[in-house]
Image 1 (cartoon, rainbow, N blue to C red):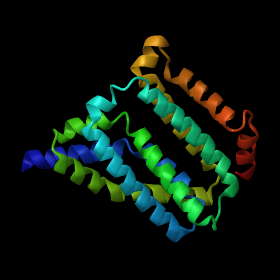
Image 2: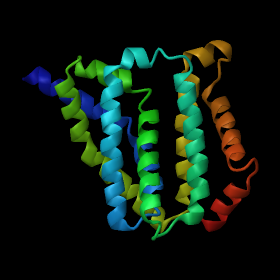
Image 3: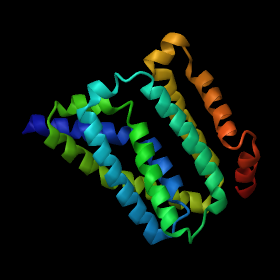
Length: 220
């Protein structure tokens, strides 16, 4: 029993320590929804993301052997950062069902992408015990949801934090890019070089210029 509890604690701690970026993205994604719908989107998106995370943790060895997977995840995060900056134009109550499912989809996509670097750590902590993995991730869900709600509430009060949140997402994408072994073999990037690439790509995704970023700064 002590060994089981220690393994369970390890999974929860790993998941929580590495879930800060997830809370930022979830909070940004649901910010424009009415409060009751916001909590539903966080719950549905988080449960869907945890289901994917369990599935891909089981397949960790195969998944992380896929060439350029981490680099692809980094590009997805750069796109998400641009999408969230651009969607600030529509922030505010009344986005309805389309906004709800769009937020849920972003939560699931972002959580899976951000989990690429900690899949092996969680798999190792679980020791191949699926029940232990499920319980550990389930325990961490309420804390992640609380963090996402706090981020969304902060963004309501201080919209300028949207820019900081976007930088956190770009930073997470840059880490994935740097840690991709295939990319590293071709071009040994450091983190700041990857950040610069990420910021340029965010600008490109914002219709090739900085109009979207200027709109976000103006609203902040």
